Image (cartoon, rainbow, N blue to C red; front, side, top):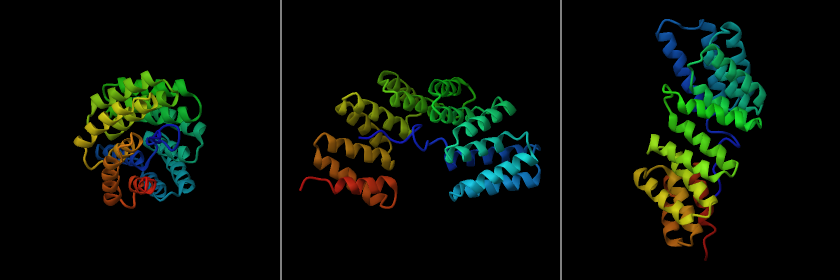
Length: 260
């Protein structure tokens, strides 16, 4: 079972979901009477749309224009950082996220983004420290994400003891968080504890029966263990339920490798 993508490749933090959170935060600020200038807000929203469509260069331009109109808006800085990260311009992304935190030290969600950008730029210890700060902040709305990011960072460093501890902390914060189950399973597999990984994924699959990445991981773990009947049942379920998605495509690929 390969390690799933996290801070080492296109990180989950730097996604459309994250930028839309920033957009919602901006809208909340507007509702409180602290709305940025109309042109700046429009440019920011246009940047979000470009990022959604994969037009990252255009997104950068729009975020930069929004910042020019409203340089003290931390949400615009976060948007720019996310776009830079998609371009793999991690130094620029780090600077944008740091500026967002400078403008709003209580914008704890940015620490997750900053930590990811630092890791991707090779500054791994600094990145882990940002995740740790985010996890320990009582205002953090998603401590399970910060703990998961720490687990993923340690997993990539092959520090399996710390990785397992942090993935378990993530699960303790939110036992319906799929990435926590996946992270624990990846760490157990890397530690040659396949049976334990299967047991953990079975718990996750019972609790989250429509989280196809978890069901896929369980099917793949069964396959590795030689439990081909159990594996086929799970993989066929994923392939049927999510035929066009990444989990469904991976399930179909594995089904093609079954012993004849």
